[in-house]
Length: 205
Image (cartoon, rainbow, N blue to C red; front, side, top):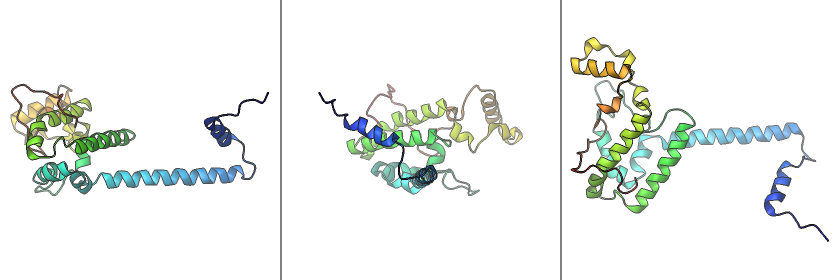
């Protein structure tokens, strides 16, 4: 009796791991290096393109209508020193692989929300503002405001040039008893008003 023929997955694995009879190890390494280089460069180009303010601010209807205009009116976009922070500077982790993981997760989440029309109108957006803001604040607390600290380092702040309240708050942060977003809210977007019964469990966003 003939043995059963291997399935397509097993045949593919055999083909992948079968020694090459027509190509040297050198050329296999060259081809692998070219593919790896192309993949690395392609990933970096995609990350850079999808990290621009224009992409973040205009690729979604809700961002273009409600989120981006608020950011462009904030001190993070235009100020007396001309030093600005972009969308990805605040909302996306700066290191790998956390950057890629977050962008994939946020892209899927936002695409689903856009298709569902969760914040497709100004009224819907305002209803969801508290929940969405808390979602971002929770992410920032979880990272100890790492994105904020990419530009603002409490250890480098000159307390003599701050008022007493700011000096005390920043000293607590330096001691690990707080984080930036505990005080600094509504910096790049309008601060939400807490509802009578706060909730973070409404529609996905």
